[in-house]
Length: 165
Image (cartoon, rainbow, N blue to C red; front, side, top):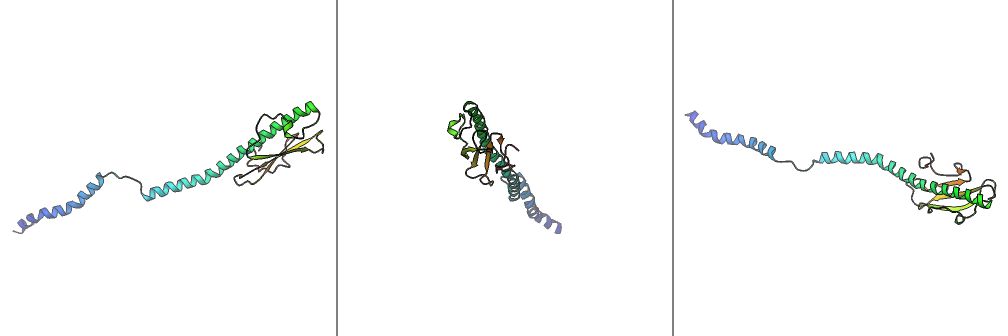
């Protein structure tokens, strides 16, 4: 008799214990969409580390390319000065007298041409370009050229940014 009563109760007991199994099977069949908070946090940390190393290097390379523009202009001015001196016997005292075939750099202000080490334009000249505007933390620096080329002693450009280093 007792056995018959257990068989009668067996069905509800089996269904009771089958619910978690079916729930587990149901959860396995559902497709998980989206990311967990931990996965998103890991991705944000990785992006932050890459940015911490990449942004300063990028800013330095951008500033170096802007400085290279000034060096190219001053090299063209030096070549034009040599042509002018060969024609006239004296170095030019104004930029407008030179046949420079490139525009003035956008990120620098061009100074005037002055006498160099000999204090006359007969034998020497000097020209300074000053960085204008924001310079990625390097401040306003100058690039000086003379009849001999780049003047490292009077230029205030940082070695990290200088295309000559």
